[in-house]
Image (cartoon, rainbow, N blue to C red; front, side):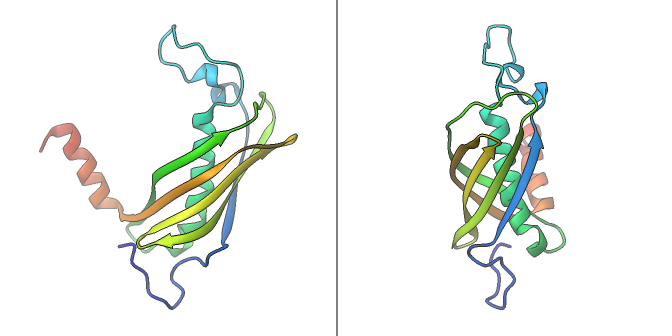
Length: 143
């Protein structure tokens, strides 16, 4: 699935894309806890930062996908270096650094109006969407 030909059916190294969002209360670390004892600060959650970075990286690959394919995140190595409050805009950028076989390696970073808030590396793979869904359903049903 992820093996592409040399005629340009994969993005070039250096290709990039962005994703941006305005931080809402639902994006705060204090909103992502699942129990009353999960106490986190009222700033942009690291999990939301990672998701925004993943979206930016997926956007680099979108136009190169064949029918029935999608890209999925397979690893994340991120540092979240600054706190962002409600109302601030966050912009994530993903730049394709290299290809490791069927996997794509991205340098990712994010910023708010005051500067950089995080950076790292993210890897994605191209998979068959139907096969992925079938494999996931087997994990629930045990089939």
